[in-house]
Length: 209
Length: 284
Image: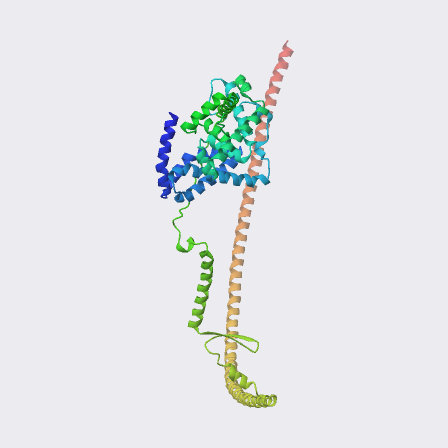
């Protein structure tokens, strides 16, 4: 059901893109609404930081609105917008690489870390313990993702979470498809090792789940 | 063992992006190699684990784009911005020059002086010619002018002196006549006025004295009359008082006599009664 709805939305987005390309501000606004969540979540997984993800996403959409008239192929909109997003993510990462700082509002509170975040949960499960484990696993996986190199991380996020095809990723990163696949392989392999190091393997997860 | 897929094929197989022929080859290879199967299984497990990473909900902030179509032709080129300022300066300079031409402004520099004039400067040459006179000439000119000036001043002074003298003599004559007249008038007036005044005074005094005497005599009369009346009243009062005392004395005497009468009567009656009693006693 959600898939079909998504498909309809994507079909709708094609007409939106053509209208936005012609300079329709309303269509551009709707396009932002449609794609914001995806681009934000891509940036969030890239940085694991809300503010930086917001920054990158906003810059991406400002750039999109400015340059959409120059978009040649509507079918390539997806790879085009991810290309912009990747560029801004890299730029942001480069900016903050030199200045490492700890924000005041993110002081690690051990008690809060260990307690389940009821308010923050959007999806409710029957079993609270299961939900908590799910959240914990999600956190661990995202932190493990951050341990990958930027090149591998980009590819893994785009492939695994954003559902881009290898061809599209190659277009986004301007590299060959084989290189993408190779980065994906090493990315997954690296992730597997990181998780093993954290004692999260097939067996422990099965036991816990 | 002729077919050996590399990691890119493995990845394509894992994400189901292999074409039909390659897929069949790969599946066959996996069946033949349990280690590859194991690897693929572990990767698939990793993928299922990764599905637990949830998307964060986010609300898209409003992105307002300014209307970029409203651009003038000189804003379109980045190079034109520099040209725009230069053109602006040039236009203002041209405007200044035209204004100068219309108003005929001349700016000149002579002998450490900057002159700023509307039209041709004219007075400069004459002034310079006059400046060539020598000091003696200037002195002579000053002297002559001073002499002339003195003469004029003297003449003026004499004239004014004469005028003043004439006016003073005139005024003096007029004033003396007026004063004489006034004095005569005053003397005449004073004699008659004094007489009148004295007569008036005498009359007033006479009247005052008369009035005084009249007033005093009438007052004395009134006083004496009052005094006589008071005295007569006093005498009458005295008389009345004497009469009253006499009357009281008389009544007092009357009362005394009646008392005496009564006493004598009583005494008599008692003597009589006593006489009778004694007689009775004698009878016992």
